[in-house]
Image (cartoon, rainbow over all chains, first blue to last red):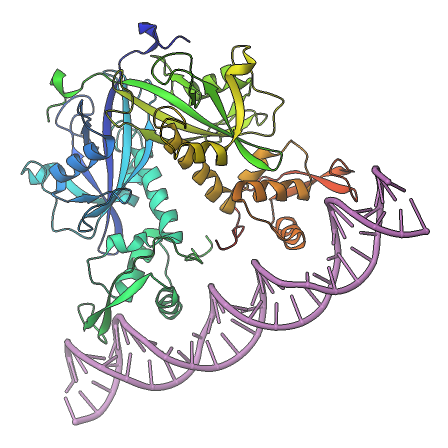
Length: 248
Length: 248
DNA sequence: TCTGTTTATCGTCAGGCAGACGACTATGAT
DNA sequence: ATCATAGTCGTCTGCCTGACGATAAACAGA
């Protein structure tokens, strides 16, 4: 177990993979890119890339995110501008056979973003898209139809993290534009959880939780119906008591 | 961004570090080992070591755990014997300057174990010990007195994970022997959270949560006082509704 | 203009759970 | 015998949640 035996620390390649989630048309969607090379050529995969030699993991994830989407990431652990998407580390995947070419350890990150115009991956519109996670995960049940590598597992872990985290934190606001209505926030919960929530109880709950929402002033009718009050995300990070996900 | 440019994937060393927690004498304690080499020679550090070339991350963590403590780890994600300690991945730390020797990415793992006789690290009793996490984290506030590398941060993250996870899962039983009393389980919560809990409400809560505890038969008076019923951990993993941590 | 549709917002009510705490039980120690 | 310790069962009150009625404010179409 001598740490100075060179054979004891074989070289690894380290990558970051991104689970970028958003809510589009009432469905939870993930960003996927088409692979241009072997292995898994032509298959869809999570965006990602190699960590550079002098780069922190979160910085590598933020760089890849900016390259793929133009989003400015915002790691909540670091002070900085609050203008971008939420980024947090998800988990690390290091099965020796997860990449047939070489030993690759991938540090997956989770990004939650508001609905965006359209992905731009190197200008090629055909090589990146938002896909409903239900489709991606269902396709991954049939071998050779789903995501490349172990990305279906990574995506599933990211979705599960998002589903549980909006329960006890104010993270659902990361899916919303800077100013949003209670109804828009409710549709985020409904899309992520895949359930229908009672609008009246939801309204009572979120407006009654201190620090969750602060009035932004003004109203909007962009959802049709009666004008709704606009809110911004409050400072609270943890919801106490939490939002309750209905029973299965 | 070509993944075949050799300069794009510089070699990394990959290690696993272990946050091994237990409850001893009413205090949450972590396993630390004394470093025998530079850098940080003579300082306390988390146990850990390099991942081998053909080894999965969880396997490396389990191997290091067995080497340091003799514990048989039990990754809940994998089927297997239920006889060991709880092991789960915690987070990955990859600051370029976290190890002055070279670029090291460390995948930290969290282990929850019942109270153990005594650590054995290569037979040297002076080179490993259980230390209360409060002491370790307080010492790490003064520079050059605390844990080596970024291990204070890793330990703090592991403790925070344990604190929040016993809230909504049955993981607190991982700190207990196979058969335990409600009072022993309560003392686990009190040690991990650092609060006092009402014995009567706690008893009502844990015995009323389906699947949390199953009677093991028999009683014990090892804590003094009236004999207490013995329980084993039930099958439930998630507690719904969760245990509520008292306000700060 | 009236009516129906959609969405937002306010209220009410009953059931359940948690915190506070009283009461009783069963052991060992002095 | 008495006390200290720890476990177990109840009670009561307040708060939160789920179910759901009612009203308000916009738009679409007859």
